[in-house]
Length: 117
Length: 114
Image (cartoon, rainbow over all chains, first blue to last red; front, side, top):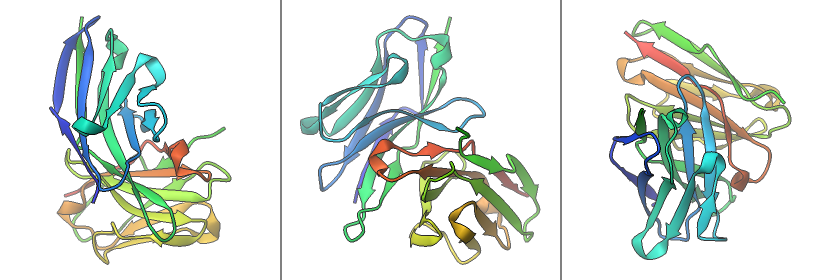
């Protein structure tokens, strides 16, 4: 069964510093991996996704993530944090139903990013 | 294009009462999903509709939860009777066809059972 582990429920950075949010996955088949962000009082927004094409995936708002099969990781990074990046970030792996092909997401517990001036 | 709409945004009910959550997906999206996040834990899948049919309801916690999607448009999730452990944020999402495009999520309904 697929699962996702996000290391660190809270990550604090200064504005302009590197953002690194960690995600490790477990999957018996090649996974599809996603990062979602939730800003206060809003729904989950897709940041980026890995679907077995390029291992370095670029997303919105300057974020990117690299799929590393040898490390079973899909860490999210951004070179320079902005105050507006403060939000909660969720890593997720897809789960495919073998008979119908319909998929559902298995989420990690989330990481809250705090950005200080 | 209107997004996924959920209401109410917040609901506070007493243990034993009934609550109905509603989700309006993006028009034309056949796939509709319900997820739940309980008390800062991970977001968990509840069920998946394709049009009006339940394709996967393996995440429904117990028979106190009933989801419907009459006519393949909006969906409701009823909790009857509500228990304290049902408190959390209930998210709805919809997608057109390919899951790989990613869902569009609603803002969620925060349910508090006291």
